[in-house]
Image (cartoon, rainbow, N blue to C red; front, side):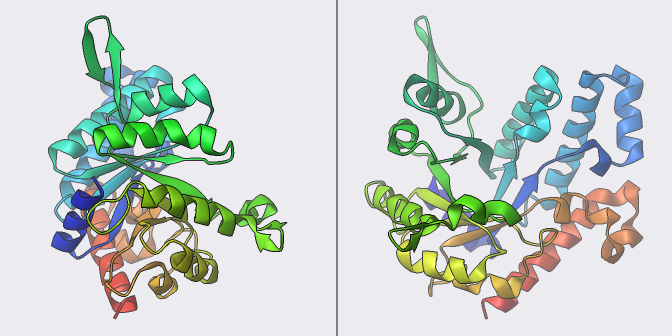
Length: 306
């Protein structure tokens, strides 16, 4: 799957992943009103609004981008109906030939981790039949429990040709409370990065490993260090736009070949119509505003990479 992701990046010339993280506050009133008229102000109505919102954004941006990243918590908050919207979103993005990164941040041990891996990336046996469940192409994984929590995902990825993005240095302000702690004189995130690189060497695509890392755009100097530690690791870079990251912060995340990283923007794209720069589109044309935001982001990154 890493080979497909790189091919899509080469085709679009936009190392961008759109974070499909739909809060109800992001969804224009006319979309919610239509959903509520059909299903009421219910969890089902909320899920329908999310699905229609996602579909419009995907329809207006799929030809510009290689990948999407739905954040499962934004769907889980609406219970089973929300998860149905998540599944519809994953399936629809696949129908548009987009790579889907399931932002699930799972991490447990033994059979629990194996179940997460099977449910999101692999297959599950039901009697004599075998099924795929959520069927994302990549998943985000929290490595805090160590190799026991990651190895079941590695095994499923090997079997299915899929991939991971393992949390190494996250973009949130308090990430340093643990990730920057010194262990034998070195920050923990460096040690995690070394472990990710080790796992990656055992799970290579053509030019990059399908075991990637998450490193926030808000920490460019740390990104520079981690790029050297993980030369064959594809880096998922959150924190662009709404969290403060800019194109100029991103150069260190890429290798000299211009590849090696993909940059996420969530509300900066899906709620672009709420920003002053795209206000002229109005809520009715929120999908067109999202398209314009993708185009501007792609230009910003291209200029930063020279």
